[in-house]
Amino acid sequence: MFIENINHQNINTKFNLLDAQKKDSENFIDYIKIALGEISKNQNHAKIDSEKFILNQSGISLNDVMINLEKSSISMQLAVQIRNKIVSAYQEIMSQQI
Image (cartoon, rainbow, N blue to C red):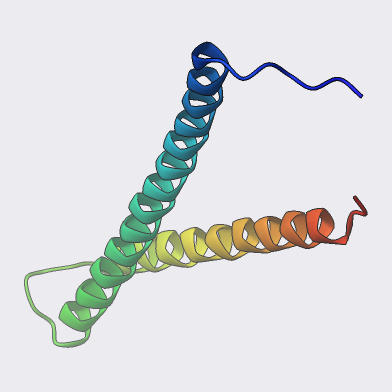
């Protein structure tokens, strides 16, 4: 069995790798937060437009309302599918034997 010498360079290299992994995970988390914020914004926009259309305010057409509702629906479906893929990947990783 080979035991690696402990020196300053090896320790720094390992910490740099850990920092890089941490930054990557933070970037992924930030990306997810931004994407969920956009989904929420789409849903709120569709809700407001549909309420305005129902109340006959500000001249919003049915076409605009339907397009916004579909954008909202599609973005939510995409988010659910991405979540399903992430959960599936996590379960696959957890089921692997070491």
